[in-house]
Image (cartoon, rainbow over all chains, first blue to last red; front, side, top):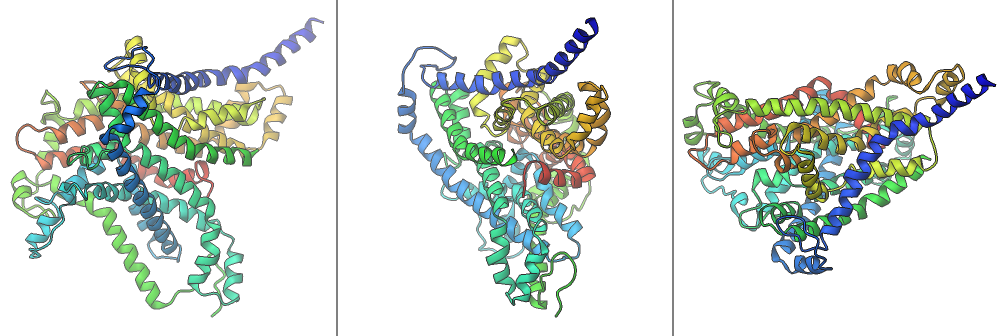
Length: 297
Length: 293
C-alpha cells in the first residue's frame, strides 16, 4: 500500500513539474507583456501627463492625437518609409538570392558581406550613414573633390527627401537578411520541378516568373511580416541618423511616442499612440502567428 | 545542352553571367562602403578628415582616435571614454543571455515533450510578445523598475532583457525540440527517468546547434538594444549603444569624427566578432528557427 501511494505521489509530481518549470516564464510574460499592455491601454484613457494619473477622460487622448499634425506627419512618414523599405528590401533581397543561387564563384565570401550589417546596432548604422550622406563632408564633398563639381546630394538636410535617407540606411542594414531568407527558400525548392520546366523549354525568365517565385510564397510572407514589424518599431535608426529632423521630416510613431511621453509630459497621448502602434502590429502578426501555429499541430 | 545533374540546373549565357557578377560585386561595394569608410577615417587625424577626402587612405596612420574613444572622450558629462559603458553592456548582456537561454530551453522542452491542454495558446502568447512594439511597455516598466529600486541599474536592464527575450528563446528551442524524437523521451520515462534527468541526459547533449543560435541571437539583440537602455539607464549605468549615441550627438566643441568612428566600431566589435566566428550557425538557425522558408 505504502509503496503504491509512493509511486502515485511520484507520478503526480512528475505530472506537475513541467507546469511548475514553465510557470516563472509564463508569469513574467503575463505580467510584463500583457499586464503592461493593459496598463498602457488604461493610461491612454486617463489624464496622465508627467506621471500616471487615474482621471478617466474617455477617448479624449485619441481625438487629440489625431488632431495633432505632429502625429499625422509621423504616420505619413511611416507610410512612405515602410512601403519603400519593405519593397526595396524584398526586391533587392530576392534579386541577390536568385543571382547568388546561380553557382556563383565566391558565394562563401559574398554572402557574409551582404549579411554582416544585420549584426550591427542601428546606432552604428545611423552614425556611419549620417556622415556618409552629409553634404559638407561625405559623398557630395568627395564627388566635388574628384572633379564632379555639380554633384548634389543633400537629402539628409532636405525636409522633402530626408525620409529617403532613413530608407537607404535601413535597407542597407536588413536587405542581406531578407536575401538569406529567400536563399533558404530557393535551396528548398525541389530541383526536379526546375528540370521538368527546362525540358519543356521554359526560358530562365519564365522559369523564375512562373514557377520559382510562386513557390517562394512562404518566404515572401515571412519577409513581409518581419520587415513590416521592424518598420513600425523603427526608432534607434532615426535617432542616430536624423534625430527626427530636419524639422519633423523623419519623425515616426516610435519617436513621437517617446517624445510625447518622456520629454513633452503628455503621457496620455503618448500611451494612446503606443496603443495604435500595437494594434497595427497585431493586425499583421496575429493572423500570421495563428496560421503558423495551426499548421504545426 | 544537358541539364547538369546538380541541385540547381539553370543554364545561363555568358552575357547574363557577366551581368550577374557585376551586380553582385556592385552590391558588395554598397554593403562594404560605409564600414570601410568608418574604419579608414578612424585611423586618420582629424585634420585629414575635415580637410580631405573620405575615400582616401590616411596619410598619417594613427590609432589616437581609438584611444580617445576608449578612454578619454567626453561621453555625457565625464571624459571617461566608452570604456565604462562597454563594461556596463558586458555586465548586462552575459547574465541576460544566460538566463533567457536557460528559460527558453526549459520552456521549449516542456512545450514539446510534456504537452498539456492549451499549451499552444500559452506558446502563442509568448510568441506574440516577441513582436510587440516596446513603446507599449515603456511607461509601466519605468514605474515597476522604480518600485523595485533598480531603475537606472544594470540589474534593471537584465530583468527587462530577460523578460522580452523569453519569447524568442522559447521559439527557437520549441521548434528545435519539436523535431526531436519523442519516443526517446517516452522510453527514458518508462525506464524511470524524471523530468530533469531526461532534460540533462537526453535533450541537452543534442542541443548544441540551437544553443549557439539562441545565444548569438540574444547576444546581438541585447547588445544592440537602444530603446530600453535610453529609457531606463541613461546615466553612468548606460549601455554601449546609448553612450555611443551621446558621444556622437554631443554638441559641445569640435566634432571629432575620427573618435566617433572609432567609437562606433568599438560598439560594433563584439557582435561582429560573434558574427564572424559563428555567423554560419546563426543564419542556418535563423532559417530553421524563425522562418520556415
